[in-house]
Image (tube, rainbow, N blue to C red; front, side):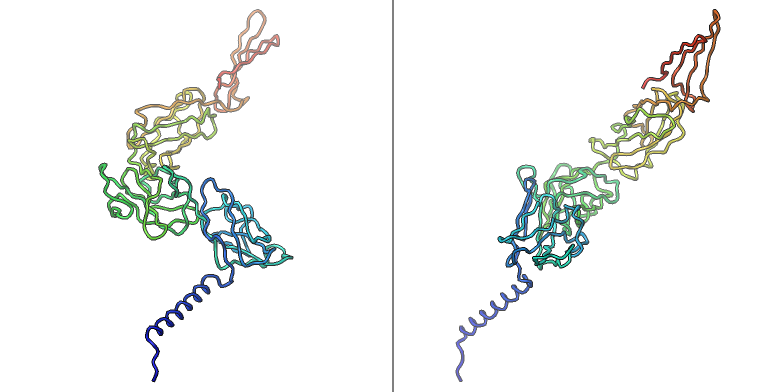
Length: 408
C-alpha cells in the first residue's frame, strides 16, 4: 500500500488550514462585503474634516455616521441638530469617498449608515448599518508636546464627597480609570501599574468611563494631595497627562464670605457665597461640611439682625451659598460665617449695600412749619418697610424740590 510522504501531508494540511482561516476571517470581517478605509480616525485640536472611502459600492450611495451608544440607529437617527452624535447625509460620487466635519463629533464608535438608491425614499427609510464601524479617537496636544487625554474637569475635588463625577477629555466609553496619589511625604512609591491598595486612602476603586467622557470616582476618605489619572485603553493602565487635586479639610482662616452680587434690595431674596479652601488654597469642602457652616452675624442696613435667611448649602466643591430677605436699607449691611465655630476669613466681615424698595404712599412721613405766612413741609417718602427713599421740600407757594435719601 502506497503511503504519502509525511512532509507533503503536513504541507497540504497547513495549506488547507490557512485557506480555512482566511475564509473564516473574511466571513467575520465583512459579511456585507463592503470595506471602510480608514476604520480608525484620530483627531487632535487642529483637525477639522475627515474622509472615509467605501468599496465596493455604487455611485449615488447615501451615507451618514451615527454615534452607536446614543440609543439611535440608522432608520431612527439622532436629530441633525445633535451634530456631536451624527453627520449629515452625503451622496457618494465616483470616488466613493465621504468627507465630513469630524471636529464636532464626540469620540467613540459610529455606525456607517447607507442606502443604495438613485431615487431615495423619504426620510431615513432603507438606511442600514454596515457590518464595520468607524472609531473616532480624540488626541489633543498635551503638556510637553504629548498627545492623549489632556483635560480633566473639575481639576479639584473633595475627599469629603462620596462620589465625584469628572470629565476626561477625550476618552472612549467603556474604558477603565482610577485616580491615585503616587507620593507619600514627597517620596514616589506607586505608579499606574503598581498602585496603592484602595484601603490606603491614596487611590479610588476602578471606575468605567461613560459615553459622554464622564467617569464617577468613589472619593470619600481620600487623602489630600495631587493625584494622577490612570486609564486603561487596551491592556494596561497608563498615566494620563492631567492631574487631579484632592483638597484637604476646610481652613476657616483662609475661607471667605462674599456678598458682592449687590447692591441688593430690601424685600427681595439676596444671595451670598462662601468660598472654602484648604491650607494650600485649594477649593475644599463637600456636602457634609454644609452642616458645619453657620451664618453669624447677618445684619441689614439699619444694623438690625436679619432673621429671614437659610443656613449655607452645598453648591460645588469649595462653594456654598445662603440667601436672605432683609427689611432695613443702608450701606452698612454685613455678613459673616463660621466653620466648626471658627469665624471665616480671620474674623473679617463682609459689608454690602441694601437699597430701599418702591415708594409706598401710606408710609410717607412729614414735618411742617409756618413762618411769614408760608407753610413749609419736609415730606419723606418711604417704602413698605419704612425705609426712607427721598425727601421732598414743599411750600404753600407751590415750590417743590426732592432729593434721594439713600444713594446707590
